[in-house]
Length: 107
Image (cartoon, rainbow, N blue to C red; front, side, top):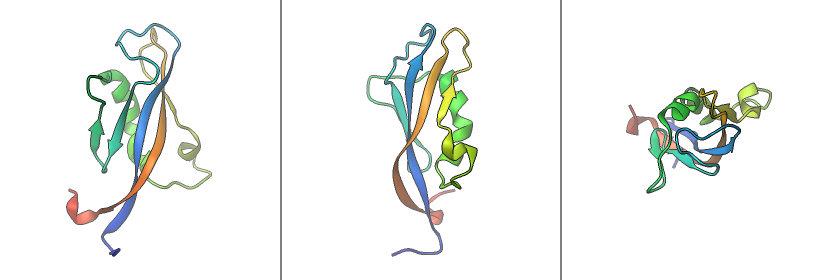
């Protein structure tokens, strides 16, 4: 049953889709992490994700978790570049699920 304290967010997957330079941090095309349940970062077992690539994409994630107007630039754009110019690593943000959360369960 839905209440006034319920809201919806998307779970996200951020995937490395291209490395146009050399992979200094050890990431490979196809590596990813997921942001689920509003704030949980999940990285597959035995894998890692570069702190600086993560830092580049982090400011966009709260907006991508929300339903945006169709004309909003962030609704249309989903590619983010790592700041390391030697790597030229490109990541793609994708919505993978939509979930209902409860305000009282979060801070």
